[in-house]
Amino acid sequence: MEGVEWRRALRTLGTPITLLLLLALLYFGARWGYRNVTAPPPPIPIPSCTPQAVGSVLSSEKVQVNIFNGSSTQGLASNVSRTMKARGFIVEAVDNTEEKIETTIIVGSSKDDPAVQLVAAQLVGAEIREDGITDGIVDILVGSQFAGYTKTPSPWQIEVSNDPCLPPVTQTPTPSLTPAATPSS
Image 1: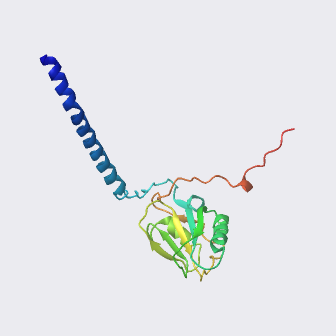
Image 2 (image 1 turned 90 degrees about the vertical axis):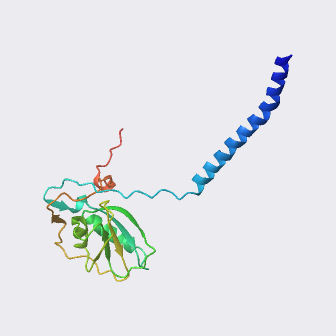
Image 3 (image 1 turned 180 degrees about the vertical axis):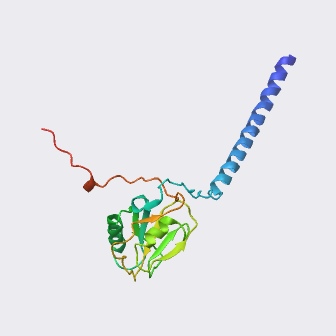
């Protein structure tokens, strides 16, 4: 008889103990989830410099630029992108900026960056703004008093003493430069 009473006592105590364990698990799970949902997101890592071997000369074909229109003139960034492409630069992005810009501003990691200097040499009256980001991409902010381009022959290359920080080239050839496919008959 003692075995039956012991089992009955175990059943009677087992249910509340199991319920308490499940409630504790639910509480700690909810607390962990709430803490992770309300926590600030981790900071986005800033890309680091990737030195690219270019020899003693950095040419425009290796420099990637983003062009942003900070004026009220519609299509100004697109016009600048066409000219920069014609001069050999790789145009990654063309868009507007919320910042109101008057003159042309070149934004890059530092004033001494060869890619920044090469881009600045293309644009009349360009001011250079350092942002410290070493991703190798140069931003061009064009404004309402855009002064235009330097006259040809403009330096489309610049001498460098060290390998500059450049992102890997991801641009695919434009359709006008690839051979046309011939239909098979």
